[in-house]
Length: 191
Image (tube, rainbow, N blue to C red):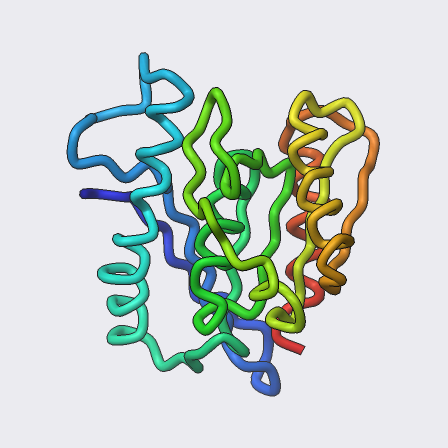
């Protein structure tokens, strides 16, 4: 496969434990060398491959190299745009590994087939969402062309009485919006 990772060991002070932040490029394909020229549907399927590399390679490598706390109480996953879709997919598929999910301007299409993506979790048991997460934070810009997909997550959470945080803010499908979401997510994890 071959995802690219950046691992940062952030030290706060002697009284606060370290936090490992991993920022992978989740385009993980054995078939394609780059994202260039791929249809959105093919691109999405290649992003969905990342779960295998995350669970089989990246997480074990981090656990073997760093002294970290493991388990869902100590593990978060977050992303923006397609990375938000992947964070949702991976976190919902493995709630025993991830207790915190952050999704900023997250495209949907994980529960039902879309023109642009095959459902990664078709037939999902939505009751798995209830009381399974310490934090679900979903956020989107009010001018984002994918806002309806993000609102679908909110509607799903409401329908199944899932506790979550959701907010919209001025902005498009852009870094300023995602940074705001990441800041609010990071402030709330591992408490």
